[in-house]
Image (cartoon, rainbow, N blue to C red; front, side):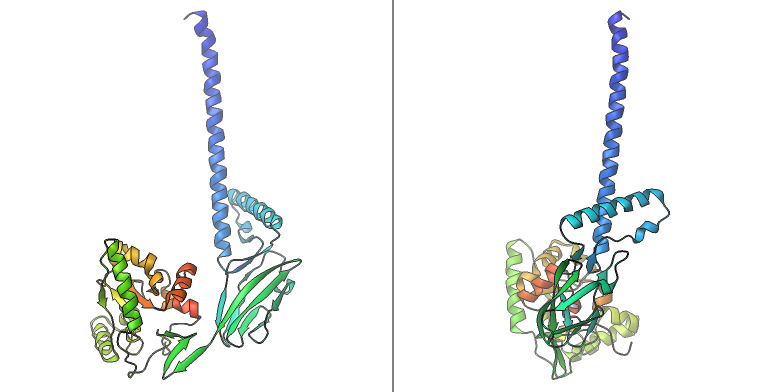
Length: 340
Ligand SMILES: [Zn+2]
């Protein structure tokens, strides 16, 4: 080993130390980024309930030290970003739909120290909407804004009040026929497959085939009598509870509306096929919705059915698709058999 080598040796050590230092900094940086990403996620989830006001500090009570520091960071971060944007009130539910006389609690998320009495709600048209103690009530069909103020800040919440009409025992909300566990049709309602549905589906099918996909009508119109047979055969094979999850009672099947089609074969795997994916992403452009989406079983009353589409018209289908709403949520109705 000559003298040059001896000088190089300590240099090597310095380089190694430097490398370790850089590596530690990188790890710390990634740690900070992950923390930040998690914070963002928490904030978004906290916002999912509706109108969010300032930050949510519920997690601050967690005895875990590291999570406390994350929460503190979140507190700082949201306080800063919010105040700089002049918004301790944020709207996370862009639009509220109600039907007449249906009461809905205003979905507010309040930060520590803020109570409902700190807010003022001004209604644009008091003939259409009433707000008392945070409860919104629809008075007549129409649209108006509610201005929610907190201190010097305010946000606009658009509200649409819809009318529920019963014509010949069929229920229409804002002109849309609703058929689910709450709203049935009489035996005599027997329109067959409606031309508007057939035409929209023909266009959908043609456009899908341009993309090399084969979407076809597996099952379309089913009248009351047919549904009697369907439902009863399932009840006798699997019992009533099973039948009510997967099939409709006679008079409550959407297939009796004339607006519904089951695409291709009824199979849970359909949603994973190219055809099923295309249908989910594109059917709204033709006026259809995936009627029973995944994760909304408690709202629609039915299991996820990737193949079952319902015609509602392009405008409403697109609105539901963009907002991720089921027909029940969109029209603000429930889906429960009255004897349950
Ligand atoms: Zn179906």
